[in-house]
Structure formats: C-alpha cells, structure tokens
Image (cartoon, rainbow, N blue to C red; front, side, top):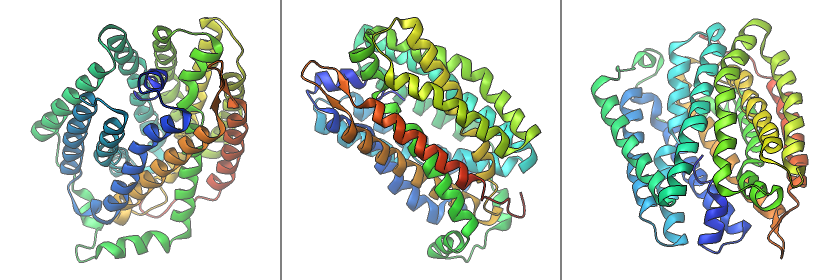
Length: 375
C-alpha cells in the first residue's frame, strides 16, 4: 500500500522502466508466497499470538532496511525480506477471525477487517505521502518500522493466547500430512482458486493507478494522497455495510451485485483522459468501494471451506496463492503497460479488460464453494 502510491517516484528516482517497477511491487509478494507456503505446514501447531508477534517483528526490521536502501537492487532485496514476514500476517488474521466467529456472523467480522484496511488507506497512506512530500520517501518506511516494533511489543504484553484450534489438530500430524488435507479436498482447492483469481483480477489494476493518474490524467504527486484518503474514508463505512448485507441476503447475491458495480470504476480509471482532481476522485473512490467490497462475500465463504483442524494451514496456503497472484498481476500489468516517449502510460485500458474477465471467472468459482462442518 505504500510502494504503489509512490510508484512514479521510484520510476523517476531509480530510472527504471515499467517492468522493473513491477519487480519492485512483486518482490514482496513472491517472498510472502514462499513464507506462506512454509507457514501452511506449521501454522496450526503454534499459538496464533506468537505467530502474529514474530511476523510484526520481522516486518519492522524489513521496513527499516527498506528505509536505508540507496539503490534499486537494495530496495528490491529488502522488499523481498519484508515480504517473508509481512506476507503471512493476512493468513494469521483471517485464521483468528475464523476461530472466533461462527459462519453466520463472519460476514460482519470480515467487513470489520476490510474496514481496518480501509482505515489504513484513509489514514496511513495519505500520512505516508504527506511525510514523503515533506521529507522524502524514506521517512514513511521508518514510521512503518517503528509501528511494527510497537505492535510487536503490544501483542507480547496484552494480546491473549489463542490456542483453541489445538483441540482439533492432530499433534502427531506430520507437516506434509497438512498439505494432504488440503489437496485431497476439492472444496478447499476450489476455495483457494477463488481467492487467487479475486486477487489477480483486483491487483492487476493497482500498481499503475498512481503513474497513470500523474502521467495521463494530469494530477500532481502531492494530490495522490487525496485518492487514498477519499477512497479509504468511504470504505470505512461501506465495508461493514456490505458485510451486513452478506449475512442478511447471502454470499452469492451480494457478491454478484458488487462485482458488476465494480466493473464501472475499473473502466473509468483505465480510460480516464486528462481531468480534474474531482473527476479522478469519483472514479478512484468508486473503485475503492466496490473493488475492496467484492472481497467480503467470497472471503466469508472461503474461510468456511476448511474444517477447524487445518484452518490455519489453509489460510496460510490461501495467503501464499494470493501473494503469488499479486506477483503475477504485477508482472502481467508491467508487461502490458508501457511508457511512451512523451512519458505517458500506454495500454492501461487492456489491463481493465483482463481484470473484468478474471473477476467474472471468480464468480463462477465462488458459486462452487461449500461450507465445511464445524463452521
């Protein structure tokens, strides 16, 4: 969420092309994929508290190393290191949510989780961009590092131990047996594919929003923070509402409606001509609302695909595949999009068509997921 809003700064400062920039975005995701695959084998054998604390501590160290990077190669390497810890955080959080909430209440809980992401966009990203405008791009990474340290200490001192899942876990189970529990279950495989396609369809748009808004729409770098501020604030209110609608009307009905609505801002963003900040804010805010909103319904169902016995491992594999999807999305977008001789972004409209096609596929996959026993 910080690398992408600063995309045009990195392209200019390190004199890199769109493909090299896509490597910078995907390095974190590739590392997160590898870490999550390892976490899949062991996560259910540990207290969720300790896993969360370790992840935040490693994330803090990685963010500090990013801040002191002086070359493109160093930043690329340290982003990879950070991803080894930060990438598994999502799996742990979703595991905790699924542990604490029954399926009928989980839509609301997922809406609250998405609200937290929205708050990060509404507060964290604009604040990071504000610090960048004043002091340079390194300062936000120092702040991230310090925040990670504080959270790690807070978790150690005050966060409750979460070991209820041990009751369902076979302590004699070998790590590779964990993989077998997932790949032998067609329902879990389908849920994993659903999560992966959702992320692929969403994140293929994300990396080049900032460069496109600056180079093609005509916004200034200092105006980019308003995009994340407006979109983040709106989704703080819309995400819980969508979550409640999921619990009230069902997963598929709400998911289809939100997906169809999300196609409108997807087309708007990628085809926007030189425009005012207000026009850009309308397009990007709608994308924030419906783009993030379409994760709530399917994630409610995806978390119900595994049994409590291997929920943490499943969530870790889900996180791994979604991080892989982010990496693929970045590579694909970097291959499709080009910078012309005049400095404009070209072929961004084709990225929208790919995004819509992938999201439509995710609708069909979501419809095939079933709720497992124990949820």
